[in-house]
Picture (cartoon, rainbow, N blue to C red):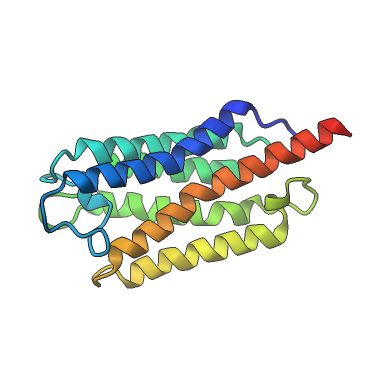
Length: 196
């Protein structure tokens, strides 16, 4: 098994921290009327949002964290790391192509679609029957991708509904946490192997 460097743990931890802290702080700065159950994360970084730099920076941090994690997650297949990196790059693009104050940005929608899809599918691409990393084996990989894709589809189904913010946060949260789980499992497998 290829070694997963310690800095990969830091980048994997940073991803959910950027997402959670960015959402919490940006929501706190919004005027009354912003509802995290109803309103999207993108609305926090949209043109016209109060202190939009907070969520914009958090999205960039989240995307860069995924890119760094993909670089260090050497226990996973190259194709899986590439898909994870694509999800990270697309997350940065979500921040770059912010939603307008009113209406929708096509570039933002395309970037978000690529990010959500890549981050939901990379565990399936990572599936490896021969690995010693438990979370890269077939059953966990299939379950992780299935759950994350179901969460993404629930967000799509709710896109014009009153719970789209909640659905988006559930999907984004799961996608931010899974790389951390895989990195930790990889480091545990690595440590166990060095003890034998």
